[in-house]
Image (cartoon, rainbow, N blue to C red; front, side, top):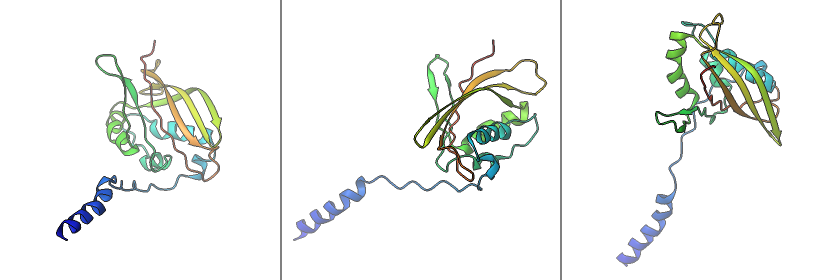
Length: 173
């Protein structure tokens, strides 16, 4: 009888042990301003606007967070010391923690140069080419790149965007 109880306990516990632990839901951000998400153009403009500013200028990080789907990630890419391509998946809060000191110290103004949007069903994929300057008066950019974002549908008024920008920085020249 004791052996049967032990086997029964093991058999009922095994499926529970095999399940992945539940992942807590990300914290809710403030709702996006309707004007920021009324169209793909509005979402892209809001993303560039919210991260751009002079040295010492605080960014509206609540607005930034509101542009992301609750599970949205930024995936910056680049090259490591050996020249190998790298990619990191970071939350909007991780991006803020990593980027804010640079933005406050040196300033950052990203300006869209070109855009290509592809749509299929309920997904729109946006490639937005940009250059980056520390100040609007800088004669030359210090970087260029592409922000690649996926968004549901046409981002109807009040809709939620799911941008996942991932700059591919390259030095100007």
